[in-house]
Image (tube, rainbow, N blue to C red; front, side, top):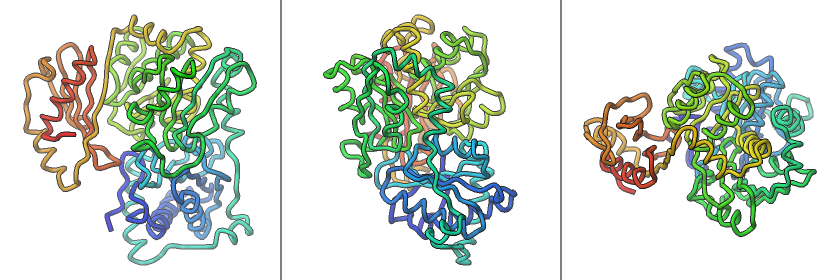
Length: 476
């Protein structure tokens, strides 16, 4: 059995390999002991789950362990998006939340996310504390247990529906009435994930019409490598936007915390462009001000917008355990990372793909413009920025060799642009002339090496990605 370790956001493993009921119960017991140690157990815990294979049953097992430890459990009555679970943690004022999900990982995976009392991603101090308790729990076989039906009868476990409260809160952040009367045709790709039906429910009741695809539960996520809202997985949606005459396409990942945007011409708007659009919307259209948080993989357009509107921009490593913490520290307006995760002030310090999509619709409704026109406005402000990334699967035993190869490689140019400096804030980033960049880093959740590049043209992006593979000594 592999060692149980929390990555960028939660512990993830292959179902029936390391993600077993015994291991899930052990991690639940360790989480309960951490809550007791920090005096959080009296406040209770919220437990939720996504649409993956056995997720609901795994969540029930977590609830059984928590109840047996004397912790009051609020268990979601159905699968829910992670941001809704985080919202419930904050608004119900519990000690913590547990979400059973592997987010955007392939179908064979599942995971265990811990959300502390503030409704964000758990920092390393918490996940390390839980990790350190797991071996003892397993060795001493000290997992407490009570049958779920018995716990429900005793009132230690209660079922609840978070959707009404969540949608009510969202309506206070977004002008849903303006969206409803805008008369848009909106295509929604829920990727068989936990956010299915949520955006459509929020905007129904007016002349705007939502058409949802992949809006049913299918744990195999057919037709896609993984439920991640990026170009390789959105071919059907992009084609349908054009053939169906839709004004926009919105996509959410397996647990609803990541967002993908398709313009009216069926073209995918990259995650970096989308975050810059959301930033421009809050600063220009809504006139809001506040710090902006971005990960090292996020676009330099944010820095240019920060300069233009006189707001500070802070950079963090990848992962909302870093972005969320910085967001709370600085009372930030919004935060974003390359994976398509964006968080907003007044909500939770956590990614929310549902709210992100609604904000884009509001942006359209307030300006009367389609996504391609909004992007053109953005480029008029900050210049053209193109981006892409490649993911290369590696064997875990290869990691040290590949990392040494990257560390020792000292290229003078990338995509024909001079390398001005490099850093290791998170991975290996090459700063190029003109403010462009290439980044090589190892995934914190999968056995992958990711190579990212932002350039002034798509051609240069592809050249940079090819150079990145050569620097790392890997090929697709």
